[in-house]
Amino acid sequence: MPNVSRRTLLQGALASTVLAVTGAGTFSLPALAASYGPRSISRVGDYGYPPDHLNYRMWNFSSGTTLSAALAKMGPNDCLVLPERTAPYLIDTSRGFGYPGTSSAMARVKGGIYGMGPGAVIQYAPSGFSQGRASGNEGNINRVLECYTPGAYFGNFTMRGRSLGGCGFDAIKAMGNNTVFENLRFVGAHRGWRNSPPGETAAISTLNGRGMAIRNVEIDCRNANGARVGTSPLMLNQQAGITVTDVWAHHSLAGGVSGWRLDNATLRRVRSEHNGSSTGSLNGNAFNFEQSTGTILLDRCTFVCDYGPTSAGGSGNTGVHLAVGSYFPNPARIRVVSPANDRGPYRGAFAVHMSRVYGGTTQTYAPSLIRVVNSSGSPLAWKHN
Image (cartoon, rainbow, N blue to C red):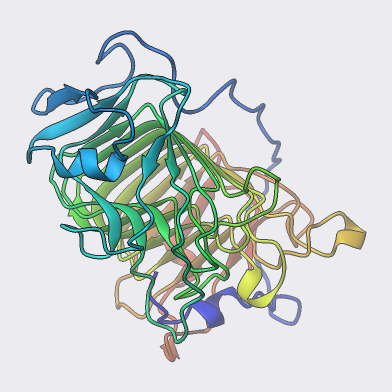
């Protein structure tokens, strides 16, 4: 996400501001779904909806072939199929984010990657490559996998990461219309260190496109030891008509599910939980939308922000359930339907952060642009600073 006003938007100084209250309602957290992510299958198409227009090529490479090298051999319409196996499929990390044929990535995907189940695991190979944190405030350009192909498909595999020396990087960055992500599990697959550039990264990052779909995905921002290592789990940038369904994004170090310059977006049953871990650059709102237009629908989503000091049962996080920001004359209308949220800063009322200044100019969001309702459309209580 660009640094237009991230620090201002996310500082979270709420206590001294005036509150607005609308409606009334009762909130409760739903039970966790049995599972998200991949499932073992025997044939392509047994699980998920891989598109018909792609050519599915089963892995048939010799032992020792890296996933980076195999992807480089794919044709423009080929989707590489990964059988389940004991050994992971290794990304070549030895050249850093400069694998031949990529822009700033360790591999370029053509038509996509389709796994045969949770045992199809992508990991980052050991090497001598190491890169420290970037300085300045330019956006992160590092990514492990990049894809520019319209209609590409990522489905039914697991992706696990490791530190690459402290630098920030996205796990997968997609820049094509109608890309689909489904039935995936990410475990510490991306790394970052704050809620603004260049330390803000994502497991799935998008840029410039329309018609993208993300469904049945788990993004765990912790490493194998349970430490928070990833920032904003989903970063949805410059997308039109994106749909996000049945996603569980949790335990980020900083930041939450974020959208920047979206035009009409639908998020259904998206669980943003325990994202953000402290104050300032480490805080995180469950959902954050900036510079967007049209309508953003948050339907039956879960907002767990763990707001407040640990002594009061929080995590130290100062992010709230929803943050909005824009200096556009007609910001997106946001409709929140049947939310499930934790206590937050306002004794259970749904909390929205809406700063008076955004990007160095007057905030154009107004309370009238946000509606929080139950399943029947009746208003629910919410407050904003």
